[in-house]
Image (cartoon, rainbow, N blue to C red; front, side):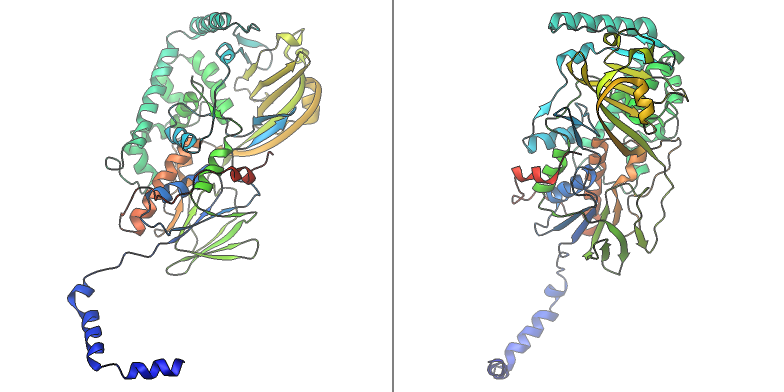
Length: 504
């Protein structure tokens, strides 16, 4: 059959071939360039950064045939967003709260048809006591009444107690946080009015946030007129709980930490990890679980990713969407990023009963719902909070500490322990002003690093903001700035996202 077709080709008139070559060599043909073929994008990291990059690439990409591969070394997605089961109930184990102005998270939640979980009304009257290792230096009131009127009275009384101790410095602190949040909101401006940022420095300077990374939170708050007592006590309590660090952290990270202690905070019913699972499902991603990438090599026009399973993948674009600080990925050619230490937070979940004698108290009923601590070298924990009171002698707690909580220590703090769960999170950078940032583009080509932005601040929302910029940066550098709206063939949320995650 092949010989017959070949013979017929020989019999075609010569003018047909002449016309063909004229068309190839014509000015119209040579002056028209075909758009680049849709790239294969490989994303390393199955947390909020990686899933957000996938989402925004699908939303902005002019190529409906864009191929996305996402690699996660564990068997579940979510990264630092996970849940734990204690006493038959599910609690957030990692990143747990979202701010009402976290607009990407708000949009994701609506788009994925997830339910918002807001704190109970009783949380407005939450009792906070500040422990210095020997005594409680500040106490608020607590009410066991379920009456909304009583809770409101207690909340007002506690606000008055805070004002009596810290004075007008509280309003100065609110003003500092509000200014920072307003500047951060610039990242939600329209695409037409918001540039694509090639560096973290450029991104921060555009939003008037860069200077906050050059000085410590303490220096910023002193200049803002806050009293030393407020900085030493309440501000320190907040930074220790949210970042496991003192007021010597950089100013921007500190402002973000303070914003995370305000009102209107929320989470996703059933676990924040569902944001990640939903974005991955909706973005038509080839998901590779239990597959750790160990080498990334550049070969002229593409990258070769090799995994611990012995598999090899070719990608025109590679995105690192996980902190490189404690990973052992070998890059060829080598890359250079500033050295950065991660701050480990040990989350210990206890079902049992606190020992009042440890705190110099007589009865367990005296212990507040939140025990926060000052910056003292001999304090073994940052905070102890009540998750759920099952009855008077059966309570679920969460402890944050910088070091593991040994059994002997826990037995001195608790008079009864029924369940104990320990999780060691490489939670966020150890902040130190002035901050130095890794590049978004690691090799000057198409190797990108979302988590370079974490040295500014580390939250679920800042990760999504950085990921959105990375997606725009990829498209602007790879396909000459072509951007279209989200393709109509994107997947809708499905119930099988449940299969992407299990409780720790």
